[in-house]
Image (cartoon, rainbow, N blue to C red; front, side, top):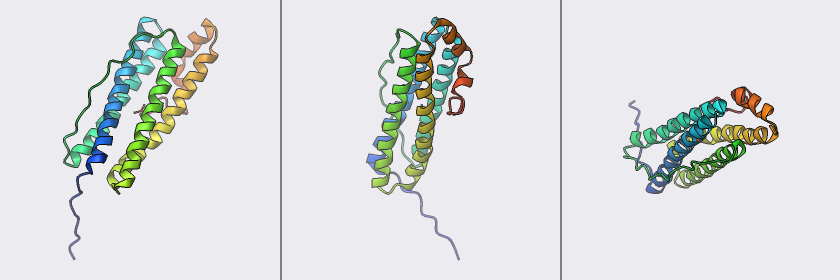
Length: 178
Ligand code: FEO
């Protein structure tokens, strides 16, 4: 007996809109991490700089996941306009806090998109967003740790150590993951 596989329906416009908003958030995070990376580079915090540049690359892959999901469902995605990222910071503590705030905003957007995918019974979007929901648990964990450890490194020597060993100090919370 032939098995009938219906063509996957295109997503509801409200789901599309929230996914487009989220992929734009991801691009914004990529720009913001790039700016953080260069601020740290100029201040000679090379460990922080490398870490933020790596996060920027990851954020672009996150945007690409959503873009491809929409394209696979016959939607040409609208990429939103990006506000210029913050350029100047006072110190590493502000940089760490900025990273934490970016991740909190990303989580909020993903949860909003998931709620709309649930409302419309959009199973493919829910599965896509499951990955992001788990990812954000890791992203918030390492960014929270980044803030705490940066604050705790009260003297120059402690900050130099942290800069040199940042990846290791954040490991176990997805700081080195995708
Ligand atoms: Fe794509 Fe750091 O969240």
